[in-house]
Image (tube, rainbow, N blue to C red; front, side, top):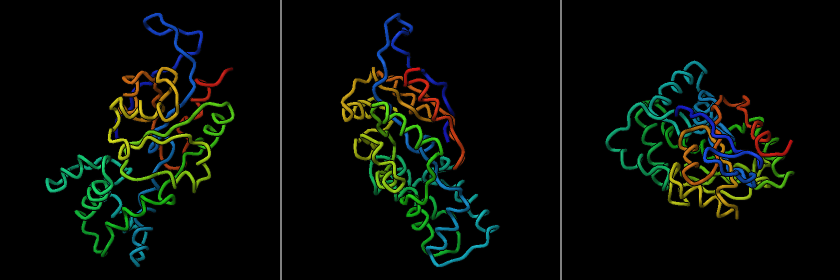
Length: 253
């Protein structure tokens, strides 16, 4: 997964930027999805669940070894693949722009691992399409709730090839999100400024009044769209990742 950039903090209304111009107060916060609001489930549990869907019960040692090989090959929501086979290069390049490319790229990568289980590649991908295949970070709900209570608009901006709205509904968080700018729907991927502008447009706010929160340099690319940016460390499923720090930057005293 990507290296992490240093955060660019939004200023309070009384602060000025490097040019000496006052920065407006934050009216909206955009969040990345994977690595910021939620994390994919632990790799071994992912493999165990997918194998079970294929009617195969794996012992945990075999599942661990298989998970390591699949992570090296490339997992949706996991580390980038060590190598993309030439036959998958086009799908890989378009994975966050078209659902068929996303599915084809990741099932193709999983199929390069000989697991001896019929249908496993598809089952692994199907697991990523379910809310059960993801774990919201523990500070996601409190942070989103506090922003909603303060009247701050919230959007989700994600490079992804499928709809994540059902996940938020399943987690009881759908009512805390005002808009989604998903790359496969927008036709642009972060760090392209266009996807951030689209999110701001959906929320009805100026980019200069918006903070983007993510975990990668692509998220920090929001500064090119005029937003402020905060980059947090990606952590393991179930561990806090510092999302609560957003409140100290956005909400008054």
